Length: 460
Ligand code: CTP
Image 1 (cartoon, rainbow, N blue to C red):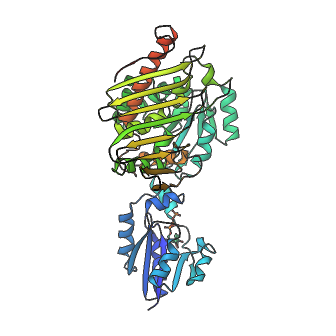
Image 2 (cartoon, protein in one colour):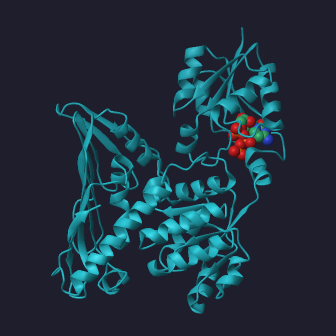
Image 3 (cartoon, rainbow, N blue to C red):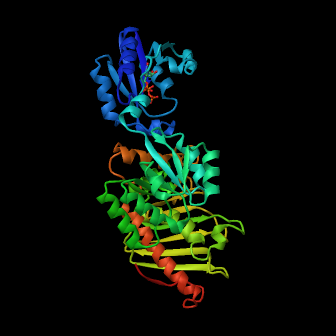
């Protein structure tokens, strides 16, 4: 019996897939089809797959060509499979010509002519309207969005907004953005969604105006400074049926969610302590060190360390204490937040004028998770135990600077292709705004002398 094997994602099953399977089957007597998992696709940079694996398997099954369907979930599996199943012919479409020649050491390799003018990518494009995202604010962060958005299909960036003409004009020229506008109203009319990367204090206003015009919003952190404002935005987004996402990049990175889920799975027992730190020394002339109202370490980076804490313990803490080291202008160079929960405790540290180890430690009753810097991108982490010889090491997939995962989540939420959002919930985002509100109140009291440079503590 001649065995043939082929692999694919088979997303939005189309004629090209059908014809490939038909010809692959005709090459032998028994066809094995490997269908990729979402996780494997994400790891190799395919981040826009629409159909869940069971649906994709079902479509392959329905063709009647596959005698056996297997799941492909890791690099190197093809060689394993060919040996394990005693395969004679390995088949791929001609778009892979040459790529799998290394398989010739194990079996015959055949590249079949690809069916022209059809692909899952094209089908995704015709099924979902391109999402026109407008960039609000053309400063330091926006260029990163431009370069990462290229890896997410379904995105078009037709214009940017900046009340300052020179900055907007330069950005649109440098990044090949067709139009720029100084009028926010006019800008909103040209887009379906916005990415808010303007100064902190403008986030709420831009987000609100856009939501009221039924535009989806991806907003850089901190989205708002108060619980009330955050709640209002999420309520408005629900009312206007638009997606509202806060851009805390860590939440959307593949490895971060995996690490949190391992912590929640009981592997390290009951979680009792979460310690997270993010510090980045900034230039003397930076906005963070010079804006007495909206600068400082916590407003800039607080969302990162609060994220694993809220993910693991929730947003309902028993008490919170905030302590900062302020400079002469009243800007926090270093802020430490301690939270007490019924079953555990947590610390969130941020620094712009104090450098510390940017690590995350999740301590449980049976072991702990250690994620070294940059844990917020979660490129690797360890699960460790009392016995120092037992270390489970993880190296999740991560590409680019990670923003592509956030943009991909935004697009998938808009298109309704990724189920309910759980990566950063409205509740968690609103919970962060509540901490921001408390922090700002205490910092301004400290500045006016009430707290003498220290922030206070109190019930959550
Ligand atoms: N294929 C084909 N003709 C097409 C499209 C795909 O023969 N028009 C083949 C591929 O070469 C591969 C198999 O079908 O051997 C599964 O391809 P897959 O990557 O799942 O489909 P694509 O449509 O190429 O997906 P995408 O656009 O997401 O890359």
